[in-house]
Image (cartoon, rainbow, N blue to C red; front, side, top):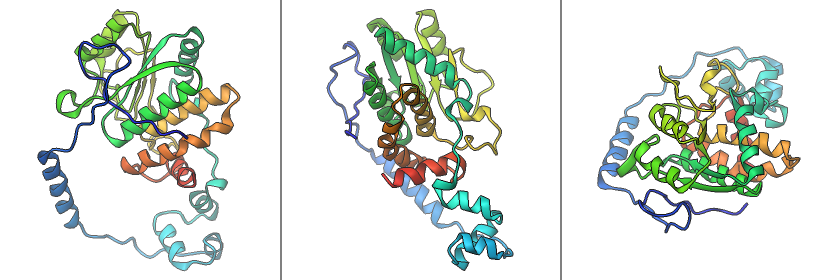
Length: 289
């Protein structure tokens, strides 16, 4: 898969395309925060689970590796079939994309935008999850013939979320559809601004649901599902992938999806996603790309 070099579209007064690349470097303050975080992590102590009974069936699933079997049993995976699905992605059945809240509604609007030649703006985030989500969506949509550009906020100037004053510039440039990734679930004012301008908004995000939700056309977020749901632990790039999966399968191009899984794996690891359900499955698949 071709690697895209992402740049920020935050410069004022320029058109939606043709912006020069801008790579904000790390700052001393950021380095200090990372150092403090690592120092705190070094103070943590391992708490080993209590010894658990290991059945012969569970031991067989691990190819007769007692240590692996004990770890699995200690983490509550004593059922051999559950353990098999945990260890082997070929034995796991991922959830259908349509399972995600509002995903079909969002996918339908994106297909319409592609068919009509409308301009789509992907709005991402500046962390690894946000950047891999953005790269995934932009690459996948371009592969489907979409007219697409992207915006990644600059941490020092914009912070997380969608700033209405920055979005206004893209609206004035003539975008037709705003598609977010790894952000947007709390951007009530920005979505209201887009709605007033006649720009539809499809939010894909994984952060906790706020008390007030934006009035977007679609809110694709695994947090609408219960905590034990197989999709509930997806990070932003996992949510973006499920949307791409729906689009490509509908287009009869599902065999191309594997080419995006390296980005998915990178985002899952960097966002420290809990390794269970579809998040673990996608990571296992992506590590093999």
